[in-house]
Length: 454
Image (cartoon, rainbow, N blue to C red):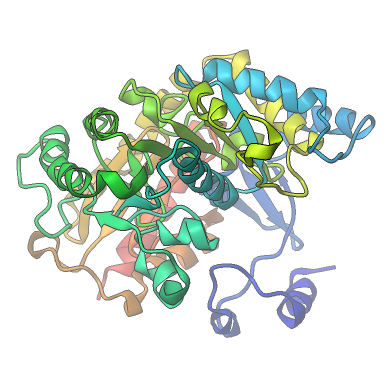
């Protein structure tokens, strides 16, 4: 087997996600044979540094020996079992561990299989809670512009990114979209020169307060990505917004759903992004890094108060009748347990703070580049936004695909840098070392210089 053979077979039968397949008439697929640590390797022996953690899932490197060992041991005992009316030790132990490290008050775990499904669970559970309490009119949700919560219809509906959403608008429920607190200076009427992230986030909160004052009676929940709106270009805001939001949701009798799918498990610099604000949501959605990037698994953590609203005689029909065939899969739960055990082996959050500083230092000179609008960072997420004219807030036209030019250069240099439009970002596995950070940064800098020459 070689690259050309597998590529031809793939293009003959496989439809890749988030892809205009016609691009692959001129943009080669990258067939991967094996992976280890931060490295992916193709069939011709060429290696690529996985600077995006394979869509933000991988925490401790590919094929981490501890996770592999736990998976093999679990496979010798139990592969899968129906989770309705049954239970098993990996799911129970994982729920116990998650509740122990989650923000205070999150005491119940409902399993799903992917991040979008976790969002669907949270949305349905919130509305159903209010219905069980005699408030069936609370059927709407408030979400932020620029948000992204997944591709299934409910999750897509509460997203605010038109690129993913617009084609399916006739199929979607209509949430109340509130202006994002995104602190990027490229945003229209965004953060002013000299204005701090905190001050701007406080100022931006007035839009959310107004929406809650106007619509709280019909709203079940507010859903947000805490601190980082990932898919829309790693847009970031200050933790004070979460504090204000928690207080406002309490005042107005509305749930708070925290979509920590992309930012949970240390990505933000703390175990969960909500920890930066010292708040606990009513629902917290988790996936991606939950299994260390090995198997699909997701869950929603919620409170005993929510759980009790569904706990009643069968004849009341208050039960939460949501299910997935692979709910609580033992193999996935074993991988998640192994991932949490790795967190216990050393202070990974301190380690990530050091790596985050190294990442910043490696690209800091780009802040003087005339086509770099901003370099922003939250923990192990660093984003570099390109613009035709940052001072006038003129973005590059999407059809110029400047970010794709950086991606192609990165592959030539052995680094996987999959951009978000004109935003180049790093979200590498936590085990990346200083030499690998330097290689990642050099590929990005060279790519940006080439992509902005004309």
